[in-house]
Length: 270
Image (cartoon, rainbow, N blue to C red; front, side, top):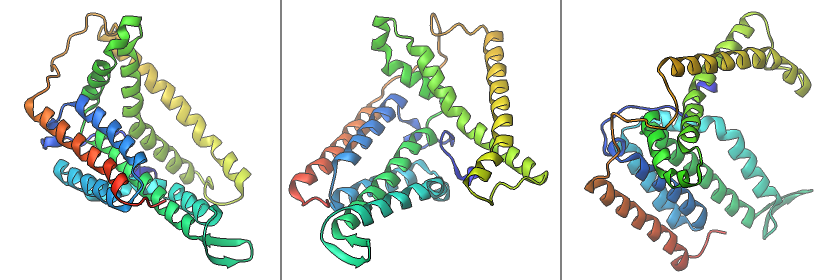
């Protein structure tokens, strides 16, 4: 299960999605999230799914990797679907004792499942196709107006990127610790809730120790390289918007607008 979590990973490539300016990608992802929570009919969701499919194949990200990234959130998807199906009022389709299934509950469950899946895939595409360094520079550039009020923009962008970058590392470390504890005879999968919670203690303590050690090593490495924050810092690669960046931004934005306008023309799912 832990190995299926791919958030924060970067897959190098030369596709048009990889070459797109990271600032444009971040803004388009925010626009995608806003559009995803505004649309409420199947046609708009169909357009969103088509857009994600084309983007995944254009970026040449393995479909197996994208599907595996959804595996850890399956419990959340099922839990959300069950809550909506059984506890939303509306026209009752099936009743057995206190259990009832309503038409509105099924519609809302479908709506939430599509939203969660599309949200995870859309957000993951940003880290799949953008290197941590480019992501840091993009966040810093987008937040640069805050420098006028003496907000530590560079430090904030650096912390966000480092945290995102170390997610796969910590997941791999957790998997190694769990395997080591199981080899020593630890039982992590059976028993009640309290027993499982106690079984996590031999995992969490080494994990925290490892995380603090990695943080100290990273801080020492940055100091050895004379890192002093964003003041006077230069970049080997400068971010420059090209004509293709603007064309893609306008095209995708128009696509979002069409999806939102579909709500005015087609009845909502719920």
